[in-house]
Length: 247
Picture 1: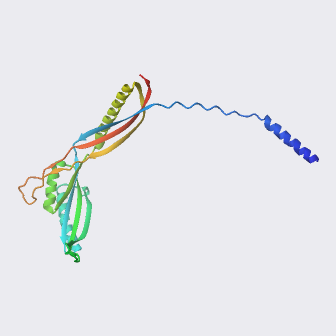
Picture 2 (picture 1 turned 135 degrees about the horizontal axis):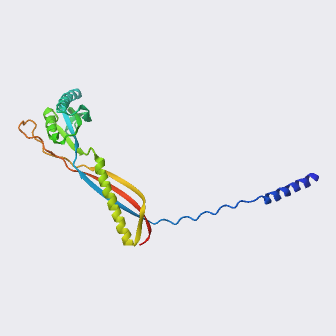
Picture 3 (picture 1 turned 45 degrees about the vertical axis):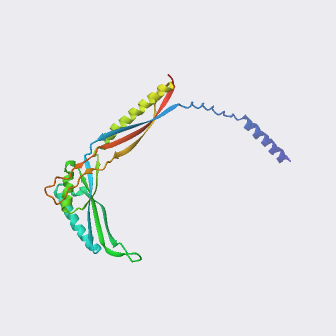
């Protein structure tokens, strides 16, 4: 009985002690800032430049009764092509294998007949990096005279694309800014600072080379003319401006 009374008294004392403890009042939260009004515009820029380097894809195709024969003949001819190019001043490191294949060829079978093996075809394609564009036509002629029997294409490029891209980007920003100014004036608001900007770059537009092939065996034939097209670099920007109020 005494123990029960003692426990009751202890419980009451604990309750009074808890009530007596000071309570901390949470600080009021600051009111959220009003949403900032924005204006989002896009601008595009474009810059052109003459290419100063090119890659030409030269191929040697050979056929043989066996895969070994076709491959060996192909190797001999390609070695002559590479020797002609390096002899003309192209560093060996600027010549890379782009594709190599050896595969069987079958004669067109008669109806309900088994396909008949006709032989094997070997193909070796190299990509040649040319830094002196005026020599491009002469190099192609040398390769053909040495055994190359296919020119798969010529690709032009800019070795210093950063400067051209910078001009395209400058134009894109300028056009985006002017668009924002026109919109702000039309809406009767004041244009604030730029809150966000993002860019999108595009690779140069590559145009096929215009070329006229001459007969390789005709020593009096002029050099194959190669007419490179201008390279076009584009840039796009997205600008987000703050709107500061009415004008």
